[in-house]
Length: 338
Image (tube, rainbow, N blue to C red; front, top):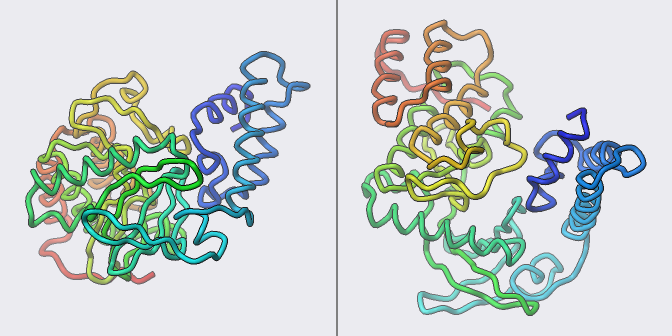
């Protein structure tokens, strides 16, 4: 990012402070803020767009400082953050507790809830629609999908509206991924390059996960490394965070700003989301795991899946299996050592 126009586009696309200042992106938050501020400062970048973006940048930076500081709150979100007694919420389906904060995402907070469950709250009530969207997607896949493939996605245990701090939020209770799973983002951090044979089983299982969703009529819409969790030893995979998902044939309405370059052009033209969108994003995920020194056949296969992704994950999986058989012969178990 070197121009004011790029800075304006990045800030305009951000819905939350985490979109701009996520430490997982590799840049320290303060460094990101200073770089954007230099590009957008009214003294250096005249014009209404730059001024509006500079004002929004200041608001998001202030919000980021509040969210990551020691601010106090009440209710489910504030209790765990401030060290207050945990919140217990009773619904028609059961009793849920908001325990310690497990993860702070771009749009939601995840809390321990006991019994293999997580409590997921939107960071802002304006993101209630994202929680409803995730609940609808997980419900649809459980109802319409193949029961044998359900372990590839979290289970929705409950969903309800909860009022605290005078604000009503949509809350999802979802199953927690078992111990031992790590994200592809974490794998990339620990090992810069994977052997194509290790990346292959991840690719195969990722195609199964999105293929199962497509059969149920759901497009994930955000198949990025931090949403793909794998078990290096057991070779399990779970595709998480379905809050940006849409029904098959419906345009995406929410984009992840820091992954803007990963989306295919049709997304920005508001065209209906198809299976090809998830296949494109999944292929980019897998490609990022491998370096340049890969067999030419795999390189050509990757390029074809990116330039003209097929509309059927199962067909691509069958073609991938044929390719792997030709390259490596019968499959052999390979633990992924991190």
